[in-house]
Image 1 (cartoon, rainbow, N blue to C red):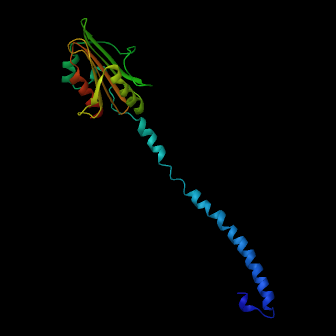
Image 2: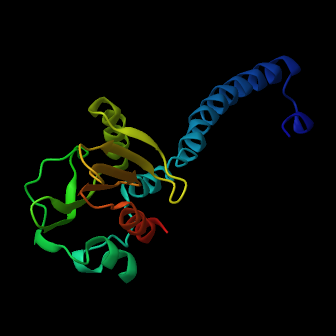
Image 3: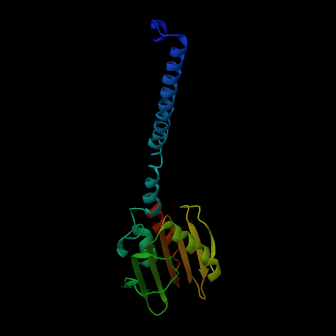
Length: 198
């Protein structure tokens, strides 16, 4: 604009004024964009907001865990497994393999006579603790694999008598322990696990 309206100013003076004006504008012009450029990149950082959603799902256990020893499994399977046994205790105080920081949800100890019975302990723990505990079972003599029926880890330890064994089913932060003495509890355990995981 100033170039087209020069009146009596000489071109040398005009050029000097113009150069000084451009130098002043150039210095202030380059300083203002540089601080404004990093601010949009800082405002674009709220991308890590989805990460808190992963935390609750890691510790979530199935909502349909059994809470009553007398309503486990289907009536037919329950009758065949423990129909003639007497519920003696809630299983508290029994020392059995269990994940770190586990919480006992349900304990049932059924007995008849001197040597026939079943002990069921259902616990919950962080899924990582459950998975870590499964890896320790082979060192205790258990044979482990993955169950085809309910997609859980299944470990078994044979006992010294007929139908005497210890079995563990573990999945999704849930740990089911069943020991049997002179009684086959496999159908009972399978029914309980199916009720939890479908």
